Image (cartoon, rainbow, N blue to C red):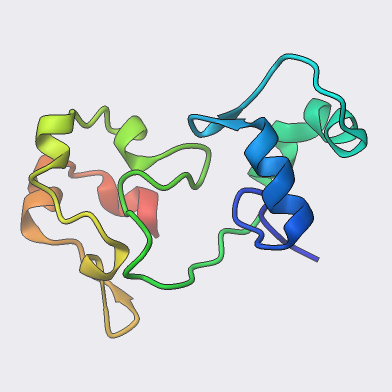
Length: 117
């Protein structure tokens, strides 16, 4: 079974995520949790081998939502000023169930295509 701890909507995952997630990463200090104490040592492996399920394309931020080891904004070192100029939502980058990278992001980040396909 594939799932993504970062997105799973089951109650246990939401509670755990609220206790251990910080800025697209996880805490490193100790907390009392029977689940977290067993997961934390393998956290990176879990993230790397989890699937990323796309739900509502209008709610997913293309640049800032965590996926594939980080955000696209982090990967490309996108400044806040540039980020404000880019279409933010995933539905701006998918047309008829196909990837479509708008002209401005394509021009600014020629390797973007390699990171989304």
